[in-house]
Amino acid sequence: MDLSRVDLNLLVYLDVLLREKSVTKAANHLGITQPALSNGLRRLRQLFDDPILVRTSEGMTATDRGTELQPLVRSILAEVERAVQPTRSFQAEESQRVFRVMASDYAESTLIPRVLKRIRQEAPYVTLDVLTPSDVSFLDVEQGRVDMAINRFDKIPQSFHQKTLWMDYFACLMSARNPILQEPFVLETYLAASHIWVSKTGFGVGVGVNPKDVQRLGWVDEALARMGRKRRISVFTRHYQVATLLAEQHDLIATLPSRAAWRQRDNPALVIKAPPFDIPPFELKMAWSPLLQHNPDHQWLRRVIVDVAHQVDEEFAPFGVQFEPSGPRPLNPSER
Image 1 (cartoon, helix red, strand yellow):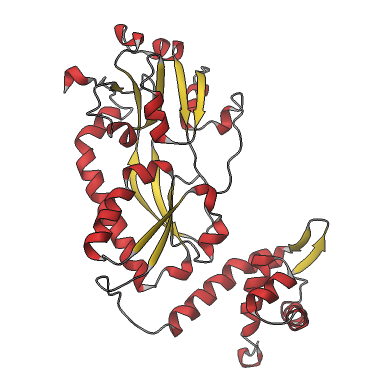
Image 2 (tube, helix red, strand yellow):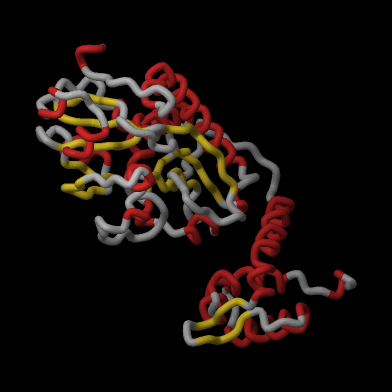
């Protein structure tokens, strides 16, 4: 095909149409009339010899060809946007940019305070807007409305760029008055106790938890299920700070990422122990839109986050080995 005869604006139309799956919404986004975009869709169908979008009971739905084209077109447009952007550097000392970062409660408590400190040192006029997973969709990140997502991701769109910040294991947090401390901390002791469940990963508004749905309860309960065991959960929360407060009650155990537990190492009311069974580790990752990959401001933000994560990882390394499945060892105030 002779590319000189192809209107490349049609790729812009195609990108927005496949994202919005609505001619009306896509036209509004592009700032053109609906008839103009309808004509563009007609030309796209001729160009690709495919309907691209078809009307179903659930609205406009992409065909197999349309679904196949979406990441290709997004990648092409991202490179075009990179090519036409003027070359510039990020002036951190003068910038008044607002960076919007989605961070899980775990990342917000273990990483974000250190990131903010570094930003204030290097870029005193930059503002950090921290959002929760419930505030954000994958589409927000893909379109660059959110600069960065920092979380534990089960699945992530293939078009996203991502980088692992660190790997973490799990630890048990409980009251120093918990009666189970009078016994060896083994699996049977653990299962006889009452537990705090804490987790909120992924995007979108959360819903209530079904205690019987092990597959949705996460790493800890899945690890127990593989052994044919189950713990008794007394309270569900989505906030690690709340979990640590609840763990001060005399008969509850919170099993949570070791970096979150380690923040309580100087709290005399709490004891940290390694779990008495193997729980697979997980990765904390940051993910961002291909649209921002070559943006100088965003490149600076990524360097800051990676540098800070590396520092946190180095500081925690001497203690983290105590929670690795290969050799768990109890840890309590008398051992410090």
